[in-house]
Image (tube, rainbow, N blue to C red; front, side, top):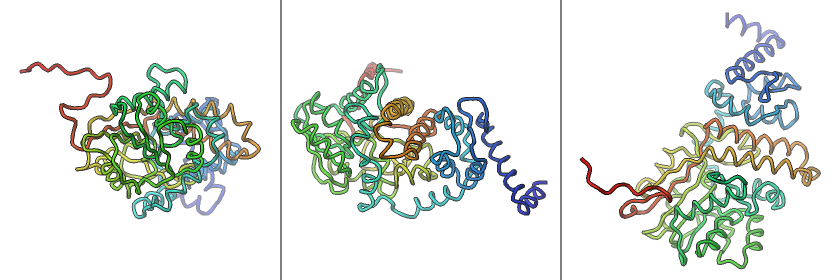
Length: 396
């Protein structure tokens, strides 16, 4: 029977289109999503050829069609949460995904020369653009919503959590690898009395941070992390490891180790994936983060092997869902100021990025981890701030 369908499809383009449409519609249905249905997460098609693109090119085809206005959905975040929970990516392996996986295995797409590309493409969109979307400190990483009800409060809670996990004290020197707009450095200098050095590959970030924090004991450098070679009491890296690439994970850990005093601590805050297989989604790679490569727990473990002792791993992925939804709300509220310059296709692209990622975190398809690492192991053991001290009595 399937052979008869395939033969008729090959001979008749209309039959081929109908067959592909039926296939994609059935796939969506497995995630509780209907084509032209009435639920907020259902896809509303303006062009039936979109379904052909989904089958042939996966999320790359789906995302480009959305950018072009060929379909809509009231709740993109819920749409992606449902599709990812149904693990539809394991059933459809279009050519772009396979090509992306092979390319990630064979080539180093995050060399020193290429590292500057993501700064130019993503982070140098303009400080005014990010100021409209982010909190007042311009913190572009997952917030910590424990007890917080505003984006600014949740980002300050995250920065304070990082400082407490690192055990910062006055007089220490902190290195921030991938410092962004300097939020962590400024917070650590203001609240904990430390001196900070930060590196980034974004010229826009450097200009903003130097102007904003010129009175604090913080130094911002336009520099690739691989060129770092000086000692600090503490090292942090928030939201930068996703740009390092699997061919460079070990190099990154070696740099962090050589920059850290023997009794120091290193906090790594990174998005991660549930498997070491696969590669970055082709749509994200093409339009949002060129050369991005999410690590798995195993890949991080391989990279730090014999360089660090793992003191603590904290999973905060659910907090990133709420963070992305807060960014999206602010982005939409401030869009009118950028519409003429960036255009509607960019508007739809950015909405798709923020809400599809929120759905991915909600589905637990991707994660956010904070790792605390030490070169030699903390004497007596490390305890996360607020963690109860275990009973020291003898036990049978």
